[in-house]
Image 1 (cartoon, helix red, strand yellow):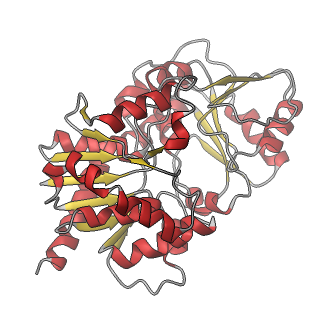
Image 2 (cartoon, rainbow, N blue to C red; image 1 turned 180 degrees about the vertical axis):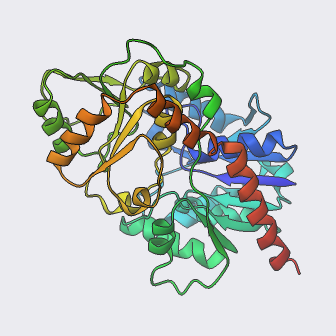
Length: 370
């Protein structure tokens, strides 16, 4: 079977998202897989000298490459950054650049299934006229242009596989969607994150991920001030503006994905300080199971999605005092608690996620080709 992912993140950066893991696992099952990331634009060219990721994406834009797992990695080139222009103009630029993109994806012209994570790439599904289109929302989109693109994509899609029930509800709200849908949570590379084992000197609190509007800086500051003897290590590409923070908070910037397991293994607690951003209600954060696999106790803000999970060695909070108590308790978790958390994560491997996703796609295909 020929499978294409239209994703929002290229694998050349510090982040690994679900489409990277799923495309790898599906390729390992013997399928022919292409992973198409959000395009680079002419505006990105100016950043190439100072940004390694942009340079890597531009190389992929010039010529697709096949990675070590056999996945075709493709980064299209467009005039303007996606989302910077209205929906109609965005679709126009994707159609105007289609000839070059289709030449680079010629072997996938007759793709069987296209999974779309990035709604701003919705017009690209026209490159694959025979394919069953599955929208795989990992977040609910509230920015007007992205939401408009998402609604347009739902008009083209044959099925939806969301990463949480809340996200599915938000995505379909007001659209009249009556097609097939399912919920398949994000998974974890269990063996990779469990490999370092338990160091005897685990200490402190760590966050690993994006530092955007979904991150609660105020809560981090309150935690650090309430627990001055605890070190807080915050890992992720540093934003342009960071609020003043106590001295026991260390911002270390982004780290390569290969270094993430060792970094987590040095800490005792992994935090998910979710902000009031509406997209957080349905997030299925990949770090949740990566933390557990790495033997960390998890402390996270309570959300619609996380309240439905009943995993061991996880503490949810609703306000800052509860967060302080949760971190204090989590720092004392013993080896039995860490082992129980690992067992919870072990059943969430990406191989299982990929098998479930393919099974759903086959069900949808059978309905669309009948």
